[in-house]
Amino acid sequence: MVEVVSSSKFDELFQPSWALDHFTYEGELLKLKLDNFSGAGFQSKSKYMYGTVTVQIKLIEGDSAGTVTAFYMSSEGPTHNEFDFEFLGNTTGEPYSIQTNVFVNGEGNREQRLNLWFDPTKDFHKYSLLWTPRQVVFMVDETPIREHTNLEHRGIPFPKDQAMGVYSSIWNADDWATQGGRVKTDWSHAPFVASYKGFEIDACECPVSTATAADNMKRCGSALPTMSELSLHQNHQLMWVRANHLVYDYCTDTSRFPTIPAECVHHRH
Ligand SMILES: *[C@@H]1O[C@H](CO)[C@@H](O)[C@H](O)[C@H]1NC(C)=O
Image (tube, rainbow, N blue to C red; front, top):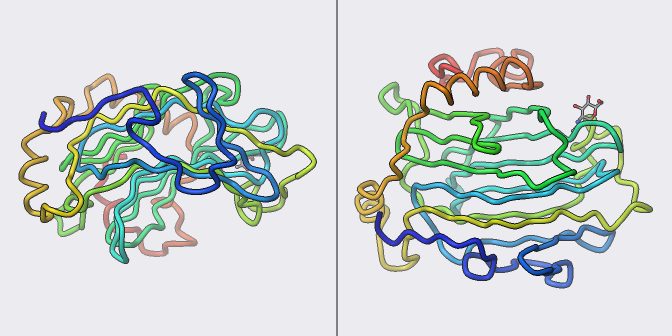
C-alpha cells in the first residue's frame, strides 16, 4: 500500500479539535471528559481514502444517560459522506447502545442500533471502520456489525470519491440519546469520562491541497487493504449479531419510510 500510516500513538495521528482542557493523557491512555461546561473532540491530522481505522474505547462507567460518545469518518461540505459509530449512554445497569449511520452525499437517515454482547464500560474494545470501493464495514472486536455495500450498478450512490478525516467526540445529547430522550443527563454524576488507546489508521493518506478526487481514487484504489470482502465466518458473525443484538434498523421502519429505502431492497443484510 502507498503512504499507509499506522501508529498506536494519539499524537502521531490525531489532534484535539476542541476543549483541550477536557483532555487527559495518562501514558498510552487518552481520556475525554464531558461536564456541564463542555464536551471534547479530536480529529485526524490527515484525510484518507479507503482502508481501516481502529480505536480502542472504554466507555463511560456507571450512569452515562444522556451522553453520546462518537467515533466516525467524515468528509467535508454539503454533500459530505460519513460513517458513524455513536455510543448512546444509559442509566446505571442498563445497556449502552451502539447506533451506526451512513451519510451519502450529505444525506443520512440510515440508522441502525444494537445493544452489545458485553459491557463496553468495563474494558477496552476495538471499534473499526473498513472502507473499500466495494463496501463499508463497521466492526466491534473484529466482528462485523454492519455492512453497507456498493450498489452503484443499481443506480444507488456510494461514498467513494471524497477523502475523509477520522473524528471522535463526547457531548451531551439528552434531548434524544437515552430511552428516546426521556432520561436526562444527571450532572451530579459528572464528569463523564471515555478512555481511548490503540489508535490505528491503516489507510491511504490524501494530501489535502494537491490531489483531485480522481487522482486520489486512482492512487488509493490501487492500494487497497487485502481484506476487501467479508469471509464466510464474518458473514455468519454478522448474521448472528443481527439476529441477537439488533434493536433498530431503518430498513424495516415502515412508519418512517413507507417506501423501503432503495439500498435496503438490495442489501443482503
Ligand atoms: C437503555 O436501557 C433501556 C432499558 O433497558 C433499553 O430499552 C435501551 O435500548 C437502552 N439504550 C438506550 C440508548 O436508551
